[in-house]
Amino acid sequence: MKKKRDLLDIRDLNKIEIYQIFEQAKFFKYQRKKQIMISDTLKGMCIGLLFRKPSSRTRISFEVAIIELGGNPIFLESGQLQISRGETIQDTARVLNSYLNGLVIRTYQQSEVETFAKYVDFPVVNALTDFLHPCQILADFFTIWEKKKDLEDVVITYIGDANNICNTLILGADILGIRINVSCPTEFSVSKNITNAMKNPSLLKVSNDPTAFIPESDVIYTDTWVSMGNEQEKQKRLEIFKPYQVNEKLVEKAPGDFIFMHCLPAHRGEEVTDGIIDGKNSVVWQQAENRLHVQKAILHFLYTS
Image (tube, rainbow, N blue to C red):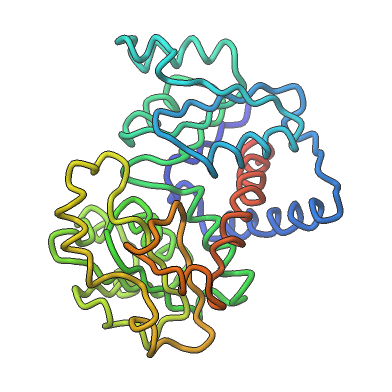
């Protein structure tokens, strides 16, 4: 019996496997444009989506992905489950193991997805935790690959809060051999847990100057300054991050063909201006579309490898 595969952390994949997912996503994207959308990878399977945080793109793209792979998505609203009344994750997992063929989880603690994966026999996918967001970042690297072709020649600059997006970008860049810069306030800088986990730490540069890496940036990426769970710090964060807004002045010295990325939802007028997110260098909508194709490819990989 083959060992099941999970995607809890981008480090669950190696470089070859990531490129396999990219090629499969490229194929699925081509198929969809030709209106050939149904596959039998998940035929007869029920895949649960357990979401303990709000979601637009992640939930919808996973539901569509599961349907187009021939499966049946079942949305599990955590507030309606006994887990919200104190049932342990272990007990919930053991019960779901009897009903489902897979589980996609969006939650707070990384340990929750790891515990679910330990107590079920089917693949578990991390659809976001406070620590990591592997599905988003795989779609992001796929988008960069589409636009820039050779990833190892690319320099990515992330500007803002060193959050779960930043964490996963760094770990993914480490696997793929991509140079990555992070501009962030000192008190919201990259975690030592992340830098210590890197196999190639020379790929990462960090500065508290938002302009430091702009001239060498092929990709400029930002995210919200106030992630889910940090709402009580909103006013403090808005003041601290104000110099880190990606606006027309900030990118004046960027290469003419740089691409702008944002995982969405965007808070226009805070971390990014309308002119940037709607401008000629933005690939934000392509990035969002690619969530569907890459997540189909992730599920295909987990169930066929």
